[in-house]
Image (cartoon, rainbow, N blue to C red; front, top):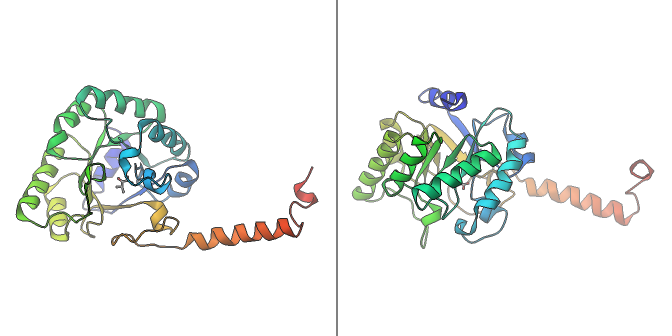
Length: 258
Ligand code: KIV
């Protein structure tokens, strides 16, 4: 077993798992000291490319960003999202997962879904690909308005069954996105593998956020996003200073000239 995955599994019921997204080397260099898992999320579609949906993200984009992210990681486990329409059947999924891992040296891939994609996950695991699951809100299949999951008893039963099925078929961890508090608690308690929550309460074994959201670079009004900092203010100060130094011919001074 990948020793980084072993370490993450050993944190269950002991200490919280820290997971954050990164799309570039500079970010992963900063995150790596504090994270257990760095996720190259297909959220890069909306955060970096201003797409309306992650469905527009393709394999090439994910691989190029992952190659950059890899260069900034020393210790965290690196997980890459398999983008939309890259795992529609077993052979397509295996070919693309292998390409992601070969090109970016990622440790694992993440796929959205439960029972519907279980044969694909089985096939990846049979071929020794490390897989992270993702249940709850699934942005790649989202139609219409976002609504938290676990409202009805049928939905709750299905989500728990999906989580158990993913575990049985060898995923090492599951992201739970926007799952009602008591259900995320139950899923976390029932599973031996760790759950990583996003909008799914404090009860999960770990938490993930989109880094650009938490530093206040990407502005969003999503309920579960806490902006821990206002990085925009600092970026603006630097840009303002540059602009004024150029206008006043203070920059570039002789120190910065040849
Ligand atoms: O794409 C992404 O960044 C994700 C996380 C938010 C879990 O899937």
